[in-house]
Image (cartoon, rainbow, N blue to C red; front, side):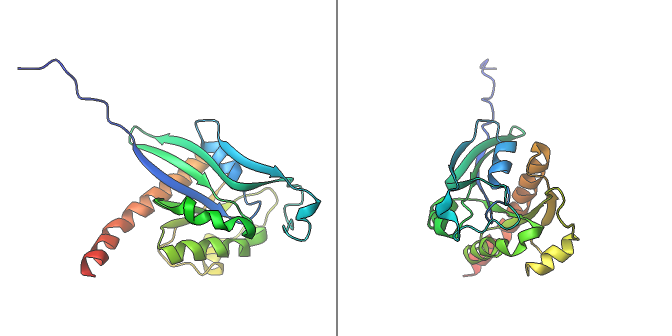
Amino acid sequence: MASGHSDPPKLPKAIKLLIAGGFGVGKTTMVGAVSEIRPLRTEETLTDRSVGVDDLTGVETKNTTTVAMDFGRITIGDEFMLYLFGTPGQERFWFVWDELARGALGAVVLADTRRLADCFPSVDYFERRGTPFVVAVNCFDGTPQYELDEVKLALNLGSAVPVLLCDARRRESGKEVLITLIEHAYSRRPAAAKEASVR
């Protein structure tokens, strides 16, 4: 006999993701572009005090910087609720990374081909923690274009790390990056579970 009650709606699975990378690479832009809520930003205006501290080479027009984090949210289908945390890019704010990284499924490392070396701290950080990550090359106007294999080689990435092009200003491009990250992170979970069981 039917009870007359329908199944409750399936709640989205909450997933925490990080958006990382060097100073001025587009982290705040990406979070803002994909978030379905008004993003939380902790930006401050760059002042004369940052001269000699923040390297503005290649991003001379940048006049603000994230000092703690950016936060946004996006729903993918009816299954996933993604909580996005953009990390600060400058070294003096890296102390907040450990707190932001706690409980994260994975990370996007945004790359700028004009300042590719700025990716290394993020790549090293997530490799050390064993956090799954993808590298998304942000296609700034007028920047040199390289083959993705060249980027992977320059960053000394393992063959399993996905590298893709993106435009941090475009919502659909950002969503594609996030979906690639989720697929990559979940593809690694069985292997991680096997390793844990062996130990």
